[in-house]
Amino acid sequence: MNTNPYETPESNILEEKTEIEASFATLNFWRKFYLCFMWLSLAMGCAVFIYVGVSSDEVGMGLFTFIYLVIALALCVWTHNAVVKRKHNQLLVLTIINVFPFMNIIGALIMLSILRVTKKEHQQYKFVEGM
Image (tube, rainbow, N blue to C red):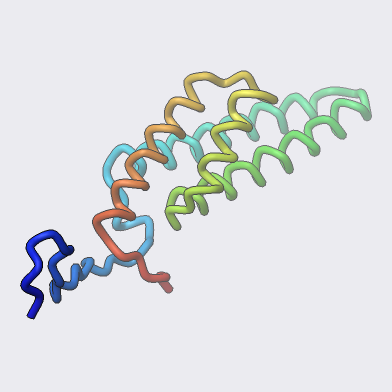
C-alpha cells in the first residue's frame, strides 16, 4: 500500500467501452439523411447528364458525361464508406476536397459536423467491423 500522499494513487478501474457495429443502421438520423440525399442527388444528376449526353450530337459531350459520372460515383462511394465505417482521416480529406477543388462550403461544414460526431462516438464506443 502506498502511504505517501503526494504520489499518484493506483487505480484498478478499467473503462470498458460498449461495442457497436459500424454500419448504416447504427448511424444517427442526420447522417442517414445526408447519405440518402447524396445518393438521390447522384441519381438525378446522372439522369440529367445521360439525357444531355445522349441527346447531344457532339462526341465530347458524351465523353464529358462519362467522366463526370465516374468521378461522381467514386466520390459518393468514398463518402458513404467513410461515414458508415466512421473513418476520421477520410472524413477530414473529404472535407478538404469539398473546400478546395469544389468550393462547396456547405458540404464542407456538413462533413465537419459528421467528423465531430464521429470523434465523439469513438470516445464513447468501440466499433467492430460489420458484415
